[in-house]
Length: 137
Length: 130
Image 1 (cartoon, chains in turn red, orange):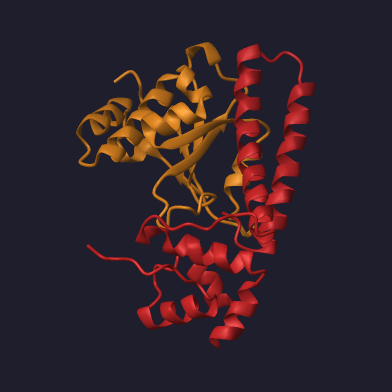
Image 2: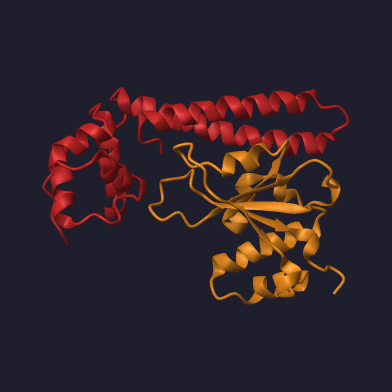
């Protein structure tokens, strides 16, 4: 999952590089059809995956994604998706929390695994996340 | 990049097989089997990296890797190594056919474009005659 504009640009750059590799591969003489197919498939699969990530990031930013949470394990992803959908940068979230941008980057890169409950609640509130009242069984 | 000298540790291909059959964790067994199967093909080096491109799991526990697709006898290679989805289903990792070391370079960067280390394993150092 792409989390910020820098990763977005890096991913686009990687797609371009891998596409150039495919172009060079197709120019190679004397490669067996199975070898060519195997290598081309390797690169194309990776390109397709990264293009899907680019599309997912674009959709989030455009507010086209319905953010859902099926289990507590989805919480880190939900928080990142919510921030992106609000058009809020990691730096802006950090400013709201009164912490350094690098700390937000670390939280998100690690899936918020090291965050304390107090800070988690602050992130939740800073992003104005809400879920309907539910009955716990 | 780390280079593993398997002969130094007296590793052999049958050790890979033994590990695949006896490792404690099922996913570990699958990964040993992936190494064993690729070692049975004619592949010289493989390069392994933690799967850092897939963030969705908070604790990524799968492996991405590649091997040079040129100069190999593709007819001796199990077809599974040309099918990433099948590899993921069977081994929990993906070993891609590389060209011009492009994937090697790709695996040595994280999502931010920062350099990260990968592991090179020279499969020729496994003695397949023993």
